[in-house]
Length: 100
Image 1 (cartoon, rainbow, N blue to C red):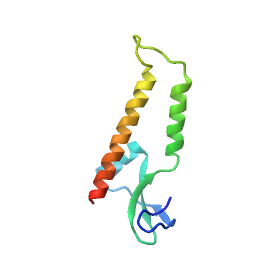
Image 2 (image 1 turned 90 degrees about the vertical axis):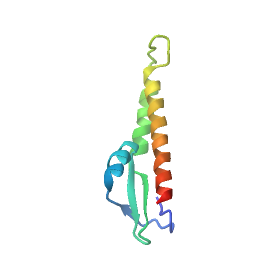
Image 3 (image 1 turned 30 degrees about the vertical axis):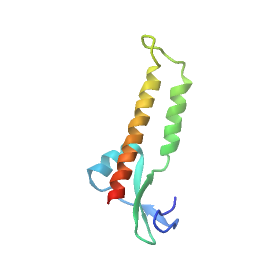
C-alpha cells in the first residue's frame, strides 16, 4: 500500500476515530493509515479482509443450492445484499472523505 498524497510506501496503521470509523470501517474491513513522510491520513483494506471475503464467497457457492419456494438460493441472496451494502457504504465513505 502506498500513500495517496506523496506515493511513499512508509505508512503505518492509525487509530480509529469517532463512531463512523469504529463501526462502519469494521463492517467494511477498512482501517485508517497514516504516512510517516507527509503525515497524510487515508483508509485502506485491513490485512486479511480480502482473503476472508473470498473465503466467504467460495463457501457460499460451494454448497449445493437450496431453493426456497422456487426462488434463488438464500445464501446467494444474502451474499448479494451484503456486497451491495458494502459497496454503497464504501461509496459513502469516499464521498465524505473527498469533502474533508
